[in-house]
Length: 222
Image (cartoon, rainbow, N blue to C red; front, side, top):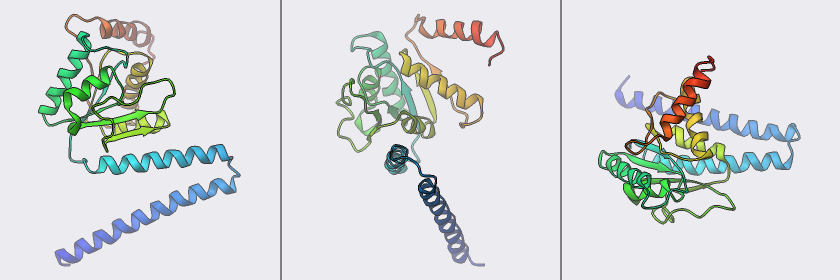
């Protein structure tokens, strides 16, 4: 078989697999009608698929680029040493050829995007009624993607990342950090570096690590 015919054969098999998967997805969704799914359940599936489709399309243009997902408090203000650390870190990552993925908000997220620059930033935003809009660095950029659901948003933080870095933060930062550790521990994610970063002499993650070792590891829960 010539090289051209081999390529055509591979292309046909790929198209066939894609068609089968699309048919399967369509069948699953149509099956919800047979199951008499509620309008509310159908809305969830519809919104989730739309969000995922949009994000897949945006990230596909940058599939060869290494990316680092960063997490940290939206409440950290400019001038805080942790803010300055995040900005410097993201700048160094951009210089090293990485793109930076953040939650698009203020605080640590804004610091990371300022450090990396608009061209090397993704903003994976969450729509919340009581939070500010996206930070000025990423707002209006095609790589700014608002999400309705946390679970679809988290998918892309993990799926697209080659490394994850956590700065000090609140419930959201811990939620994202523990999810990353859970996925790594259970083999549901590819292996990647998970870095807990603080200012020199900082105790935020040292205290966290002590809690994990004393109360979770010691009891054999991990």
